[in-house]
Length: 346
Image (tube, rainbow, N blue to C red; front, side, top):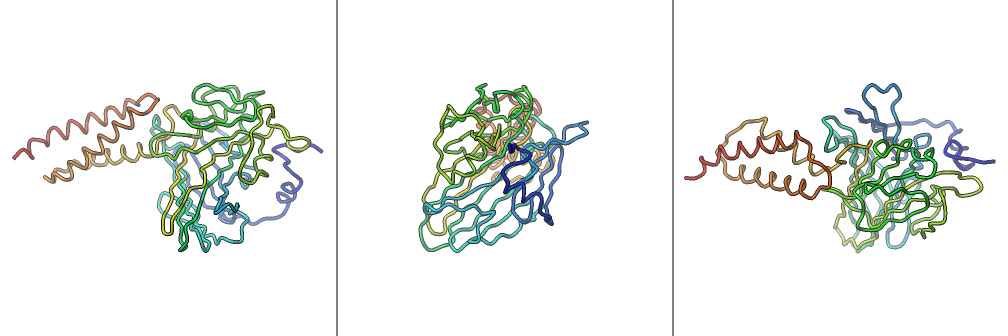
């Protein structure tokens, strides 16, 4: 028999047919909905377009467990969804949800929060932040691999993915630095619709490598993967036209008590992309302007000026256009600082 995204392997079909009681956490804001399965830690990401009757899952959603991460710890591979070496607890905090996995060696904190893109006035994407902390007394080597089960590009003919520099991904492909700004699991033939996965930008952790391949091959590869550009996204005889992308954050030394942070962002395609740090700074500036306080504290003004400089630096590094509302905000802040400057001359 031939199984595709709707069937998978026989083992996945059996899992789907089993009665399962699901417990989930959910965040919904603007045009995005995020749901996490409390049992496995897997997530579903849905785009809710304005006026759209049927929300669009951005990743394969029939079995969200097909998207997930694995860890390489001292050359041993762990899949936390199935590993008995880790105890899992749920994160429920204002504006963020997620999971904490703890073993004798390592604590992994995975947090999700909803953000808006650089060009949007409503939330339309997510940030996933990992904190990998060595809680043992020994030094470790720790890496992370995130496998994303994409599907939107599977009905496009040859091109399953498109990069920000207009490269079409039609076969098994590997990318290494310097990366394009983003990759798109495009919906239909459009280069401006689908799942946008950021590879670099302010506030993000660039991966060490990116691999596009058949989901089954990537899922069964453990950690390392040898790319063959002659292979398509089909793995005969059962896994047909089944694309996925894996982000690799290579193993690196992690001393006792040390923490490694990895930050990803993705969402529905949006001009300008997703830049977590930029949004944080912009929100901080907007809050300061909204307060309209004049405390007479030079230290506060200096801190605000530094945030302004950081925001300008990020905009200069960006390859995308700057939204007009952000330019207006920066001009307002600069004008406010000039007005207050006289108070500190003496």
